[in-house]
Length: 369
Image (tube, rainbow, N blue to C red; front, side):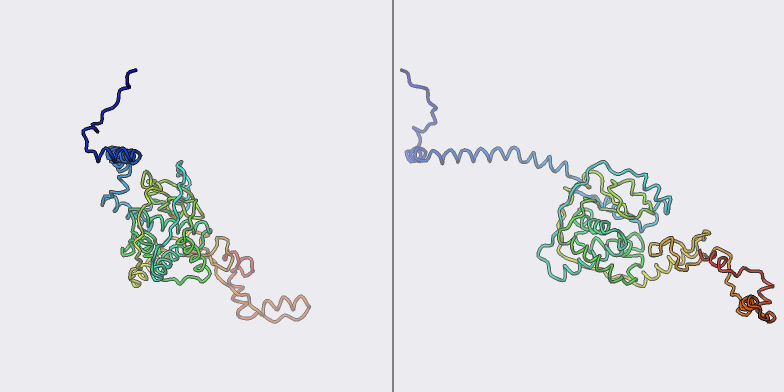
């Protein structure tokens, strides 16, 4: 019977020591050969995979200066960005459709090893954003504002600290990213209860809590303004008076939020004199507007009165004037009803008779509505 053919590896010519090692350790030999094969395979495949991944995510890594400038200009504080305001803005905003893309989840943010001062400064900045931007919004809306701040911090287009995001652009005369940092809102002392609520929201967000309803949102604005950039973003949701948006394309995907926290927090030195001048200028501008009959004051976000408030607000557009009935004349009707002699009318009663201005309560209250 003929022997089966064998594979000649040239071991007969090899050194005896090599033959002995291979013969004694066949399992080890196979492992070495397998390892060599894996290394060769990785050398061929991994570079292609990395190149493909880099091509798909190139916009997330390479950000042009023009794009950064475009993003930094997207602010409602810059009035040149506002197309329309008031009821017309609410109607136009309602017409913008919700994005059909799913709302992607983002990871909760957690501090690493930072000093208590760093954490305290970050907490202050985030609390300010929640308070001054959304103190009177539903709780979900307040959490969404905190989520936007932290989303921006982890996005490559924004600063890598909480305070850096919140105060971005505050050095400008107009165009800051969060209006309260440059419109004079910081001159108003916060109310204790609302501040505690805002701080609780900020503390939870810094501990990893996420508002899932807004996902990867990086922008929002009130529904009574319509900025031009609203049409360039993906509309996610409206919570209270705020409408939230995400970037389109890869910038708005959860994989884009890979920025690392800098570990340093700093609140910039603000020019409070300039803030006061701007606040006074906005009040003066409001006073020069034409008042519409039925509207007592020009609406402002700082006005906390409800539209149906009956706490004595006066409609200055109605031609009414206050007239007080003469007490002697009023008492004379009472005496006449009792059959008592009525004294002659006083000087004030003569004036009231000469001027037929209405003095009944209903006519006076008509001017207060």
